[in-house]
Image (cartoon, rainbow, N blue to C red; front, top):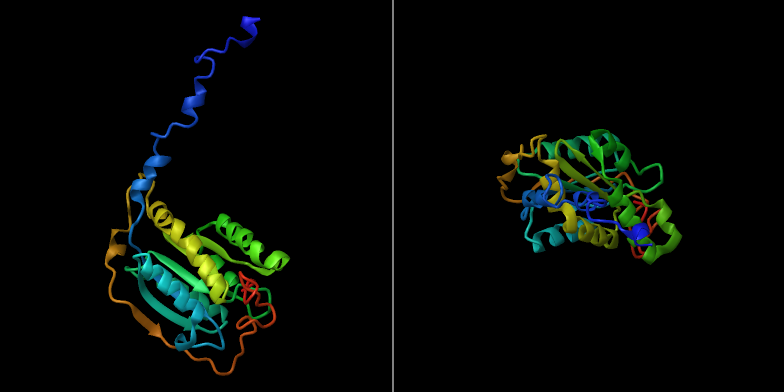
Length: 239
């Protein structure tokens, strides 16, 4: 009977190799993590201004309280071209290592953020949206199906697209802060494991690229209106 259960360590030599924490690309990649990031914040809304931007303020405050720097903030209306060009401009900034957008992720005709950002992404990060929806479900239940929060990497810069409510922004910021430094460290490495974006560490003073006020449009995804349930059931879980 002993032969039936005589499994030596040699028989299972693969067990340690499968989890060799010393191999490149596993735990040693944490030394590339960034402790301080330069982050650009973009609000997408046809009814708000930067002076009345609770979601953007929530994100900016969370970043700064965690020791990161908001390199720039801007606000654009729900317009495909304006959203896409502004996000690309943020990605191209030498002082910016991550981009966060808030607003325009819902399912109404005006919601174009995901469509505008997705063509810029070289890699998508579906796990972020999945985690955001899982956490949101705890608060708003099945209304979470209208939430299209997403993330990906464009030219080595992680981009996170959040709904436009303050509560959704708070949840998104919490999730981003827990992983952004790690993602930036990984996304900015070349095939040899070396950082290729050292130029992205000159974090200048926080600036506003422009206070845009679109008085003609009305954003149906803000302030608890249609399609705008938030992470807490308040506003904009789908946006």
